[in-house]
Image 1 (cartoon, rainbow, N blue to C red):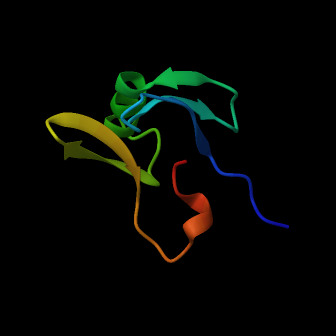
Image 2: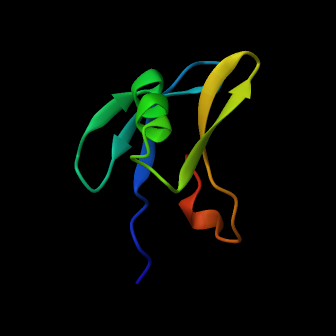
Length: 71
């Protein structure tokens, strides 16, 4: 059985930028800004923050498993 993704995207802008996220383990919903802050504070070690077009953006750490990417 495949493990459930820790975080899922629940809302994105028309441009495709991920905007709201859900922690599937705790049920907590977060904005992009809140999720970025949690990542920076060490709460989500399997994710990191990239600057994409001047906007701090949460991304999954790279690995060989495509099933754990944000989306």
